[in-house]
Image 1 (cartoon, one colour):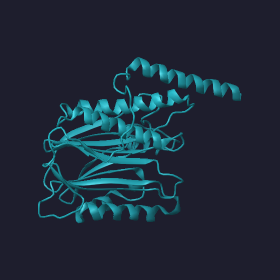
Image 2: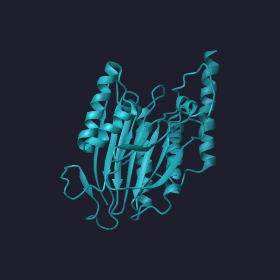
Image 3: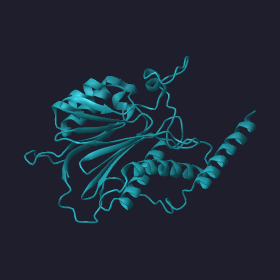
Image 4: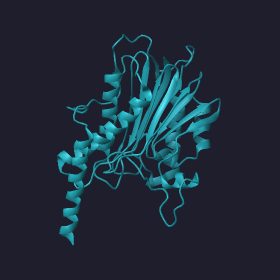
Length: 300
């Protein structure tokens, strides 16, 4: 398995960067993940980091060297990340939960499958054209697709995320068989909110990812100006030809069996899998909601 990859994250005009991204791989499989911690709620960067760490830890456990059922793994990893954030909030006695979006792609067997929750996006570009991209879990995207009809609302608002005291909605797509030169880009809304899809596709199509990604990020920051959101991108080109020389090229062929490589910071997730039963999570959510209710009652 061979690919060239480049990732970058910029704070923009925000006080802190709540985006997180990274990738990990074995000899025969690769996982690429991006999360955007949500403002308006506490510790968005913690939610994003917990999401990455949880998905990465589960991947390390399951990829031996491939994941057995990719769709089942991605769905389970999203829910595990959600539960981990809820448990973190419950253990800290927080009155509101940290929240994050998530998009993750798993590549193995020459195909890509991905999952997303919220409005962090994945693009697939082939032969200079947009092959597909994720549809945001926002009122704007769902309304434009004719799914719902709502008036007098902010249609940019998300209706799902990880960490909310409501079961998240997420979509798993694939597998999509990859062809030589396919480009896959994962990004936070700081990129696509400032640049139209055709600009993103054009950059990805005409430049190596090591040049396209930083150029796209700089263009997004310029377009948004001083009020720019965090801008985070991770992109790869599939099966880069041997003749293509890049310091960002990765070949997994030389990795030994059982070896796991990762750019995602490890975390202490004791009992992550064993303790994530629905009953325990329901208790945690109930405790958080009760704390919110008591706090509101004291203010009235």
